[in-house]
Image 1 (cartoon, rainbow, N blue to C red):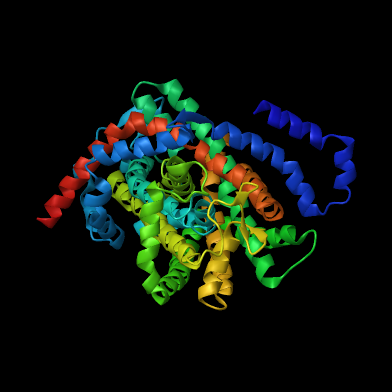
Image 2: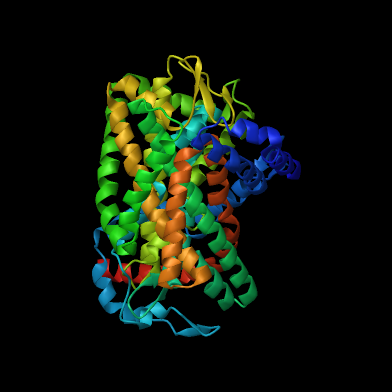
Length: 538
């Protein structure tokens, strides 16, 4: 790992580098400067341990093991209370807010901060359940559902889809835990502005358990990583894939084309994010349903148009999950890793990022928003990712490309050329619906834009936790964030994925440790809320 960084650093600072760099365009120069760091960071975060004859990233063991534990501990909340979650979003239990004093806990003080402050102030939050869900979904239902699914299938074949679905179902329970804690330990200032997320439940909640120093350390670590994740997976990756689609569809050329597209995205995003969470929520609650209908509608149309092949595609998914194609490296374990890894990147369950958006909800009951949060992995992974996967598998039923024939990290061999990410999905759509690549391009741009908006809020909350809540800190973060929008559009997919995967997955280490310490508090909140629901429905 150290040698990789050392050798790449020497290459960058060698005389030959500057000679070759002089003949490069702007996009290539930016990419070459960024790649060494991306490689080093990916190797650090995705360190593997030997298991079943394969190297398995430790972080995936933590994610899946934790998700399975929470699913069992909370009595399969992801299944048994799925309909309850939908009813909460619809507002069926909104009137329970009027009787919240019945659940008011004894106020506790931790290092001078009031725990459960939210229940003692006039302000309950900034957005409703649907807006919070829309904002969080816009941060997860993004290009990971289009580009990353294509990457997973390119590597692991159809069987990777099975493990993505399983990871999504289990991840619902993890999301329930972190979103409940996000509301329970949030801060609200005198103006009604909400500050929440893992930074706060790690510091306050773990201090409440008697480990104040550990809590502060994990909170600061999470905040630092969250800022980096907002720059990478939440921003640079999104603008990268949107730019790729625009360039492909319009046949654009030029050494600085990606940078120019990134600049346009940055300007549009800047107009929205200056207004904060309320403006972001208003935009996402309109954009998310539209882009979901647009993309999912096209996918369903393709599936229906090839309905005679759907049973064969499903059979491939289940068969190859345990007996993968010979060309797929890593065998059964390799396919499982691909599915879990892409699902983790896509729905971010265990990363804690969505808890930041859910913390802004207008409710006195943390568990109510935990239930809303569990819908995210289902929408993101079980529905959208699965539809994308089926469309790609249907496209390849005649063997137009070979599963597992991947080089340079992402590029799949197709028709004599190497393609990766969103372009594979685009071809699958175009093959079934002539002209649909333009629809997909619009969907990609909307996915990218909405994700950039949501992650700007996540990163800003972490930034303010680290550096204070002044207007100067607010503005400084937004300027840097928008610079990464331009950077992402300029560099290659391989560099972006290396950096983005590792940055978002790195959040798992401090967040999951916190969840393992704090889950008993979630049990208490959930039990109280269930009693109120039972009383209302009976």
